[in-house]
Length: 209
Image (cartoon, rainbow, N blue to C red; front, side, top):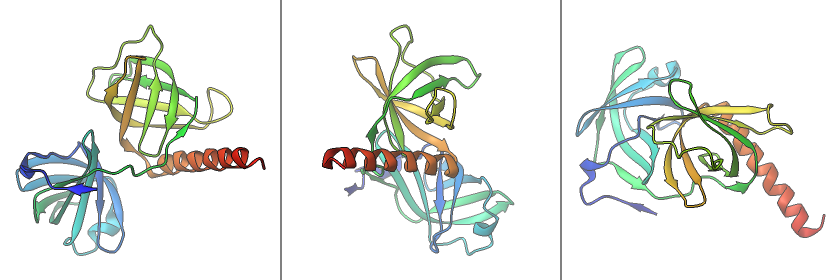
């Protein structure tokens, strides 16, 4: 479901997201609001993207309200810096973009200084976020950015994926939902493959294969 906020200019992008071109190219970006209708976008790579016309672009980021999506065009200021002009007000797309599966995996949370916030277990995992069961001794993180490491392998220490996220909700059961703000494409694909494998396994068990 897609809706446009009654006051669309009040909608703000998350600090990180992705920039998409009309021909399907996309790159991760950092986003800074310069004015209501202008954003500064820092590209993480993207030489192929800047070699193409910088019109008919789509900027997306994920926050607690959903996926914020903005159409616009851009002007190259420096080799990795764009001035992004909005064609229209941003819209919030309420969607569950990723399948979620139940999985108990080790998850280590740290703040921006590298201080340990919690050594915990996942409850369920998707390509866009994770639900985490905190130890009773750990406090619910109150920092703006949380660095996460999730271990997907057979032990508590192998096949790890890392990135940055923020807490979108907490529960009385001492659980937190962490939305991913920045994760590499390779790690996100690793998570998605893990989720799909768990899905297939659950389906085989349900059918008695």
